[in-house]
Image (cartoon, rainbow, N blue to C red; front, side, top):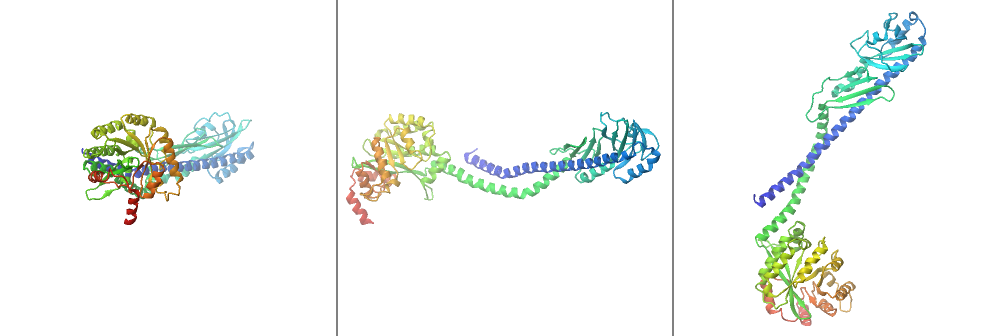
Length: 534
């Protein structure tokens, strides 16, 4: 697959993934939110059911307390009162008195004798407590409907009992859970289960039913609320319906932002590659003047990019993109090839300096030394001095490794300089870490020169520092005779800027070197002509 097609495919894949991200996150978040919402509904329903069961238990124990007024009275005297009490109070199926396990009186059957086991249709639970309650499947009078039995036994084996009809609990469960399809159940003392709702919950593939269990802190009552998967799915659909328009907006926005980012990032890398293949890059050279030799002593190589339509791309733009997108190494290698081709046609004296900027990424690249040595071999017959100018746009991580590389190249006759000294965040650390031959003072400090009788403390401090470190100094951006004279007075040997020569392409440089390269710079004449021209 061609690289361009792979790039386009990757670009579209990334844009699609960016568009899907809010939707996928929305689906996950709404699913979590739906489960949380339904879970809270479960808890609320369980608490409501538990509160109702506790309320009915309170009524039952209050009833048993009320029955103590009939203690030790014969049934024929209290039969009517028991019937009235059992009828007028809600929830109760029947109430009565006990003598041992025998029912001595009942609001439902009066004098008819029977046992507690016969009435409950099961043996009483063995709890070891005088107060106990239990849920049962039915009673002797109503065997097919659940109930809850409450018993209070006294030390003399007598006691009282009350039966609450389970239908009240089933009706309450149906009222709070039928609309949502909840399956609810409760138990008293692990007795029979009193349940309401669908007996079977249809299984869902992704939304399984969940059960929530709660217990009373006051009575031995436990409740369970189960929700069907369809209820969870319904809650998720409602949450998704609210979120979906917002997710669609975020999705479109993220796709647009990703597309713009990719257009800037991927297209710059692709454009640089295409420009290298199409030879759209060229090298301009700016001569450097030596006040000691009084002639041109070298030149700095500056990469230029001209599009097929004639438009020029500014170096600060394409170099910053090349550095940020991993293209600075191939771009510098291309620069070395272009320089080697140009230099073959030069006629310069031995020792002529040719300088070029090297980025931190290239310095730390495994091919750096090999790239520079290959370039040096290609121009070996010109006997030129290669000057490597370290830029401060990016930090050098492994300083010691880079220092070893630079010392190795210095041992082969190359020079090392810091470009735009004083403008970066690592100038002083470069002085301590790397073997240097030159410092190039940034034009910002040169522009501060206003008169020969006015000092610039920072510039003077930099020049003095260079002298103490025995480093040669080059002043960049020199544009006036005043700046030239100021630097010359302070022992700055090398001058570079529009005052001496502008950057020029290879053909113009060769003609300029033949005409003016060996001529001394006449400061007064140049200054007067400059004033006359202005």
